[in-house]
Image (cartoon, rainbow over all chains, first blue to last red; front, side, top):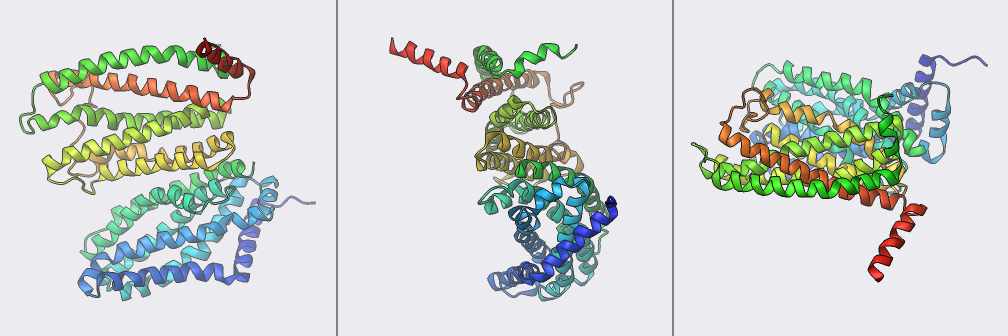
Length: 227
Length: 252
């Protein structure tokens, strides 16, 4: 038997996760619907004045994106843990870092990317400032992978626990706060026609730090959870 | 070798008794330092020329805030040594530290709010340092919740340890937040050891208070560490003889 190269193992897991997700389409669509519904709740609750809405639009979109990602995180390891394939992956000769990264990439493709695609539409509904669209897209593009990466740590820690759902939000949301702060401040600066590359640089720094470090934390946590 | 003296303390029984010996000394020192420091700080230290007597909450607020970060660092170091060197007792000490750290974070936030009301005119603002201290509280609560979620205590320790290590990134953010962002919270006054930007007759009572609180925290950690060790080793013979001896003492 020839050993599987790292790249082949990576793409194999991404393809497998994508295929499983496309066979259960609800898993992709439900977080998106949740995202849309949460965003539509705010104009109903706060009132339809466009000046108020455009002021709070960045925060609403980002908070809804955080919550939608949080809801979808369960899918990352739960079913694999239940049917035992997670343990098989951990036993495979490939480094766990690569397998974990592949699963996170697949998760981002299935939740982060659709969120980014639908965000401009919701921004129109919320009367976002015209100059802010670029900032919104850039922050989402850099920020949603961070949400998947940091969320994976939380899921990996709670995957062995029966009622991990509420606990998961308690663990993950504090870690999301810095991303939320810098992303919304970038969008606000853009609305005032100020440069926002400083905030983008910080989000990019968080992205690269979590890209390189989070998979290690996830693999350590998975080893603890599967025991 | 250099670390040979450390080996006996990997034994829970030795560590339990060592913490037991440390406990009364820390308690006494904490009592002495805190009573001297508090009386000095609250009655005899000069009032601030701008803030008047309100500033005296500083002697409680700053030690609590510094210790809230210090305890987190200690917990993270314990978690790291438990994950890397598989020290079971490091788990126990991390578990002992988490609730104490959460309490001190809470004290720092509450005293900060009480100080902010007369000075800034508001209990709370979304300032960088306040927000990151609040995140620290959430991190502590997450670590405690994760600890309680597992039945198996050694698994719980490892899982909570990973979370604690991930959260370490928050510490430099809190430390430097007042320098990175120009916010309402004032800059560091006591951190600069060479030339503290406060007068000596305010600095010395602060130092005494800080040392007192540090001994107080050490005493609390020893106390909780002992009970963690006992619950984790409740089936071991040495714990059983210990309990039997205690019961005999009370029977007579």
